[in-house]
Length: 302
Image 1 (cartoon, helix red, strand yellow):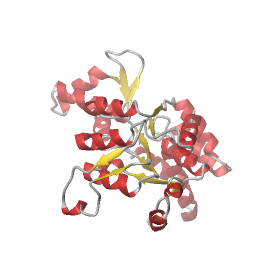
Image 2 (image 1 turned 180 degrees about the horizontal axis):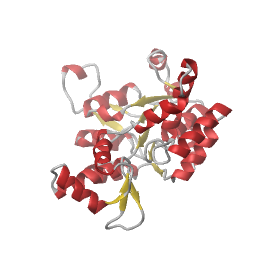
Image 3 (image 1 turned 45 degrees about the horizontal axis):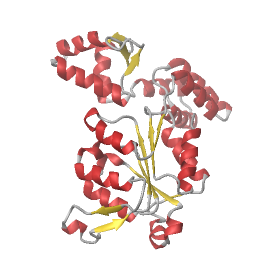
Image 4 (image 1 turned 90 degrees about the vertical axis):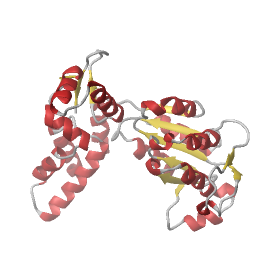
């Protein structure tokens, strides 16, 4: 299941791939497996502590490093700086939705992920904050995009980017996630915690929740308090603002999408169009789950 991530990172290591796109809902192990593969193949993460070592290194050495960037807050000007400062390394963007709102950003990414020839990136921003940067430079790095979903308005731009690299779409059922979680649990304590959260919170658990649960268990043991009660309280409160809004309408039950839309219009004073956009966005981000294969009026749940 995760082998494709490891295989394509090996391609990057040997200069056979310039961009990798890893898509899938949150909590299924995308970031965990990307990081493990990078470390397995000898890549070193750039941190504040070793940035000066990276800056002084030659091109061949820089190719052995990677930098993690939260892509949500990356403007076109900041992207230019990132591509320049971390040139020759692997730049790993952990979110891409907002990055695609600017045509200049898209132009930079198109150039940076070009498959053939030299990749000359030009600076479109002329301000005092950019005075230390060149007007253009040749980009020699590689890029990993790690994301849950892309907004529909950005979909065409992003599909053009995807065509330049390798695209991995991780799709996992709850049963598959539970299987991975059980393999992650190494000792008896972790196995007990994993069994407990799978049994009691099937619709809410994933690899992220599992790691949080391990930490909660350890703290409760130190404080000598009931870890099951703390976990129950913690997991039941884990909802995004949008999920909380929907939970107030339907709780943990499943409902036809059209019926949910009616509830939203009636009780949240939404128009049909706004309710549809709201639900579509939640489905795209994985905050709401689709049940069944009926394309017109399927069931949904949190």
